[in-house]
Length: 137
Image (cartoon, rainbow, N blue to C red):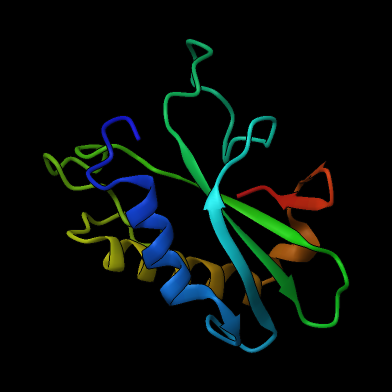
């Protein structure tokens, strides 16, 4: 994980502890798995102006309400200093520096709760990879 202060394994473990299970984020949310992105899966955002996708990402797999689709949301592992605080990566929800993988996972949970509660599944762009429908952030 280039420039990110924690290994991918540590981040995935923190996210699994926080997100997996029925209602772990909000009513209607069922977290199924968290893993590193697989080759061929879409990045969480468009590449930068130089054409490079400079950061790795993790994928949260979930189901929403009674929808039978398997959804995926990719989260970039932004390197430390991206938020202006040397060494600390930005939180996904607030953009403020976070100091632990658990704090970063909490930010992901806040982002998911806010976005799912305000229509992410209805309004997000989509990309299908295998049996996963990726929702654009």
